[in-house]
Length: 524
Image (cartoon, rainbow, N blue to C red; front, side, top):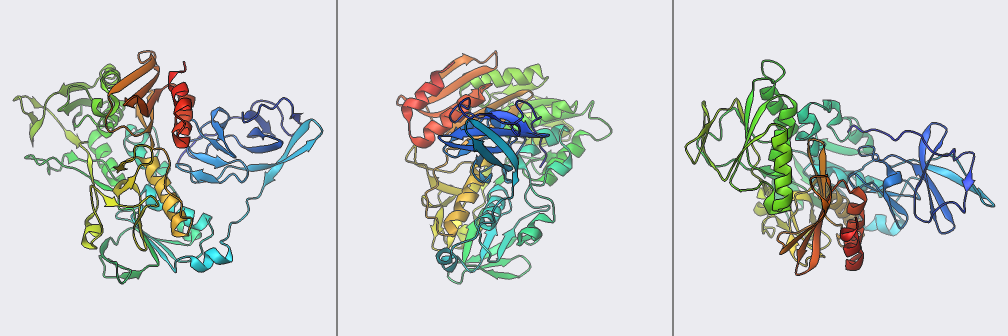
């Protein structure tokens, strides 16, 4: 996965800075030689770590310190200041930690400190499962495998995927990779040899077909049977194809896998750079609109068809949806809203008003369905996904995480199934820890981001419905906070150009601190 790193700026921390000048809980950006480093004071303790998030290189100096952690302002990855460990996705790699020495009022930063290897204590090791099988090599499954090893689990771990190359950076399928601004080598979450080095067996060409809960056995398409001490279902979701004539044509695509994105790129660039190609995107979803923007970056003519009057209004509200529509229209996208496709033919996409939109390729972005066939065949409880408890357990010895899991949301008090990349990774991490006996409820606040040209929308919380939408700031100026209220209480917050506000809102929700949340959403 590609990233950038912060340039070394600020004071020379090896030469020393004043302890008294360090503000409590506020990162100071500096450097040690050529390394960009942040220094954080917490009481009498001072920590020094690398200054760049290991996900996409976000500036941790602009992040938020919470307890002994620092959170990235871009995608909310969370790192331990004490160990550097990536304790919260989407980052998987740790940041460097440096030796810190204090003499009187002077604090000096020395060389990087080698990370300590974690091992399970004797009691935890005795209680650990004999083996772990993870069905699904997406965000949740990959994060779970990594976490099992980082927590010190040494038993066999098998990670079963449905398609090569294994775990990938799925958000980029509709963003930079599809737009042509990210190379393919950025797409795998890990290089091919990583899982072998980790001691994880990665299987990407032999799908799980049957689950015997009583025997604790998974049978693969090849007939191979795997017994497990603990099983994680991370089967994700499958893209929907509308049941209309022509939906199965070879020039009609969905976008869920790396192969899907490659196919769309090939169709968009057939015969050259993409100039003169015409695409119809069916669905005004986040995926649909990100695909539209990426195809426009390749010079493709794009029309978007959606039944709603304002795209994204159901999720973000009409003011934000109208703002996003304006971004796309400025980028050259033509909208056909309030319309539905009735057929896809060689001539193009036929709409319910009789119009036909010419198309060389069609992309459907109309949602996904959780992959529950394996869970259903095993008799697990289903309700728009696999029903799990607060610890993500579906039944004895089986957990579920990611797009397939329906879990109790502590803030709303309702069971929810959330299709966000970061949520999936965080649930994979949480499930792995609970498999090893942590017995901690999953209470992370949902977060996602969506990119439309040069505008990024960040969203925390979860509001399936709201009775009041409050905009603070100026959407047109790309500087705004949007609060989604139900019964006066803020259930979710979206921000544009206000990354720190998003971090503060997430922290307030995490602590159930409505006063702090109100302060965050009302601040200018």
